[in-house]
Length: 224
Image 1 (tube, one colour):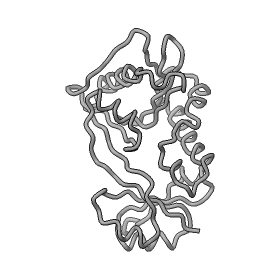
Image 2 (cartoon, one colour):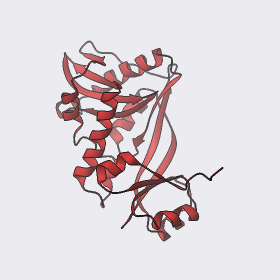
Image 3 (cartoon, rainbow, N blue to C red):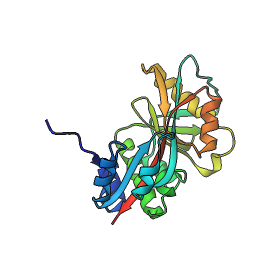
């Protein structure tokens, strides 16, 4: 039996950035050494309390910290509003227009070695995949599409609101409805993954009764 690879190809990132893209399978000097000998863009996720000395020695730079909100039916503090509704019936073009350029907190947008347009394309491609798999909730306010939440399994994977609906305290109604619907389908809990810098979404999840787990620091490295 062959050993598990120390770096794994990420074809979805390769397609967006036009270069080989990789994710390290472990935090070890052997994996770091292989990465710096392999052309392309590299990602590694490490425990925030891990010693980062090797990362700096091998030229990796910090990009983001991800945390994992989780909630079950017993903890969920749901909120309802008569003007807020959700539906899996969505217009793909409208959803893509709302999503394009909406993910400024993403680690790829914060990576100074990557062009913003390519980072936008990466999320556009992901959203198209979720739409193709019919894994997107449309968020409606008084019958108009206001945003979307894409999901995979029991995870809220990708979400955005149109600019006119942001900052108005409306998100709790849509997130509540989506969580209730997902829990009703048989999932024991609902989870997500968010940047620790995205305070609006962090506060939203906290207000709904989510707890936060599994923090991970994200480091990148570009190898010419």
